[in-house]
Length: 196
Image 1 (tube, one colour):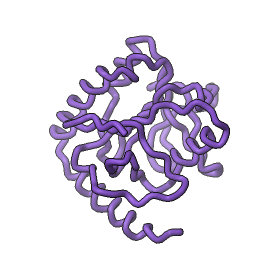
Image 2 (image 1 turned 120 degrees about the vertical axis):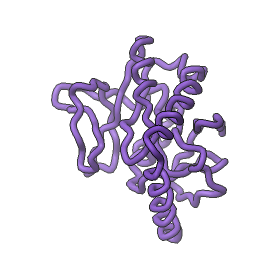
Image 3 (image 1 turned 90 degrees about the horizontal axis):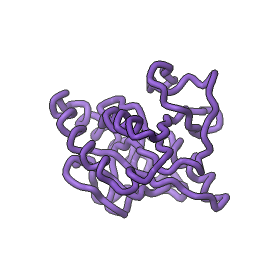
Image 4 (image 1 turned 30 degrees about the vertical axis):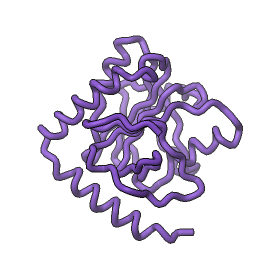
């Protein structure tokens, strides 16, 4: 069951170190190239309810995509970690009401907010540490996105389009998968849009 754990752990460490070694200038350049690809996507243009992420630990910053989405009148959400349930819930992205969770990642203060049903989201942008050519994603290892999305699969509800955001160097040959892993629909890097 946990045969791949040491390999995945080592991969996470190596890719995190490399990602964190990028200069601010390199990160900004990549973010701008990815931004241009995202705003031209048909699924982005058609989506009304979108979930984003707050970049941390060298992840690609997509704040400019959020600003564009809001300017277009789209509803923007961020995931909130419910650690006891090992799930995410999605709340309105109000930049002035963000707090840090136990992993030091910014998320909405949920005291005054209602969450949106997962099946009402049209598109979810996900950070990642690695991806392969089958759309498999290596995240931080908590399995929160997979657990959350599994609930849709089990109830035959509409699944949002899942878009991974990555640096090109994060593409690898194969990611060992588990039965609960949910593949991505697209991955966008500074060089290319991968569709699975």
